[in-house]
Image 1 (cartoon, one colour):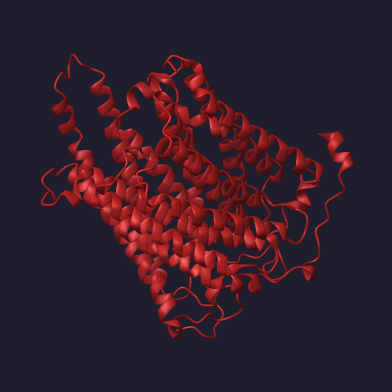
Image 2 (cartoon, rainbow over the protein chains, first blue to last red):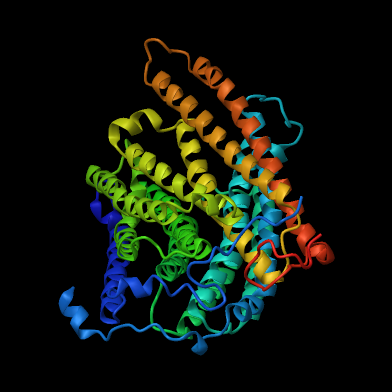
Length: 64
Length: 490
């Protein structure tokens, strides 16, 4: 295969397409599962009773 | 998208009763996370030592020349692999898997799998780095580890990836938080990148320029699809979490993730601007690199607007200090990176210290600082102990922050002049003169490296003190909130 041949790049191009396809399929899945709606509620899933919203949960220790 | 939205049920947030308590999840990951963070800190010290030897050699060429084991090429590559795969990957396995487990809200299954995989990872890496120093290094940047060590690394990584998928599979609650997207995306991308690059470059080498294209597809994606999403995942979890305020625009954060997922993969070719590869490929890489401005601005708006008005609280938190420093630098380093992908800028910066400065800016000022913040938040909750010394945390922060910024400034300013001089054959016909002109910048870089060493030692002392002298540092109150309550304090 000659160096000028674009086909040499084919494996990488196919991989790029595959990468892209997987991302698009996952995006479609997430839309179907309702991940792309009601953003306000979703941004609060990190808070729990143990570490609630509105409370700072980290400080420097009161030591030297 | 609206048609799809109508199809989907409204996502409800399950009540906390359904979920495992955070402290329970923290406890279930204790052994493996401790192992990973301990390994990360040891690799950080080893990597810093290698880095300092390499840095000294650039202004004192006669330094450490007695043995072939400490030649520049070997020491520099040992430094890269020790900090990237030793510190970086171990701290990712420690911190990001913990964030993932917390967001999945389910008790951890197969924690032992993680520990075994972690042992194999560190054994493989030790063999690999010893191989580099011994002289078995490959000639491929970012894949220097000799052939005999890589299968062990790949297998142990796959075990860790499988663990991540199991944790996700058995999650409680439907919603996938943006940090989970970032961390899962990275867990999926890294083995793909690593295994394909190993096959196409080391095991069944592609011929000609395809090899270099593969090399930089891999090299850049390790940063963009492994370190970057992991650190962003942690930042998106910790900034709102510590401040007790939801992220400013969750919509933008999701947009940022998807634009990274769809476009980043193309960007690596900008490392070959000016090289003998098809011009359209370079142009595509340049366009993708500039498109990265979208997720970067999105992250910048989100992180800045979440912190705004809470600066005082943030400054009192070691976690927020480190993470916000990292997040700000993510914006700056990414914008500089997009500019460096433009052909006329690249003409100056290519083959100079500017690129080295850029790499440290991204991996240290952004990635490592966010991960340090993650460790400062995670360890007290894992061990139910407080950090023993506030001074050591402050020392770590200031030495790392100022040291890394000094390093980036020295390398990028020196590198820019170096590039201008190399392009000016009329006034600078003598290459050695240009090399000598970089000397003051190289000395400054070594000083900054020493500052980082001081910071890392402070971090290590504080960590092992916390680990091995429990009586000194018992937490006063509940497992997750560390404040000024009286009991149990020194």
